[in-house]
Amino acid sequence: MKNQVLSITLTLILSMMTLSIFAQEQQNRTNTEEAIANDEKLVVVWTSGDRDVAIKMVFMYTFNAKKNGWWKDITLLVWGPSAKLLTEDKELQDYLKKMQEIGVNTIACKGCADLYGIADKLENLGITVRYTGSELTNYIKENRHVITF
Image (tube, rainbow, N blue to C red; front, side, top):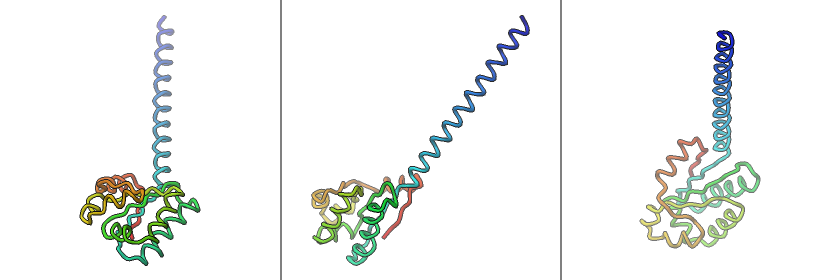
């Protein structure tokens, strides 16, 4: 009887240890998948009101990065003077539309848009307008790749 109790006890302990190890491996796999997912995400923070920077750097890289699959997920964050420039330049608006059509996420800072009085214009361009300070902070904390222009 003592041997049977000891045998059952050892089996239970080994089973619990196996389950614990399995659970830890699952958590590690989930963490790795999340890290890989965030490693494939790029956030382009566009703040410059310079048109040449927009066309020859920001838009060219962002469009080609998405088109060529260099990143799985790309978000273009329009902040500050870039928002004003975008609402005034038809060529940039057309280029933005091409980026949106291939799957670039476009958001703009509501605080900045309100300073210029252009939130409605940005929304009419298909851009999501919301407060983005904490969102950008979260992107950084998630270890997404962030570049600024």
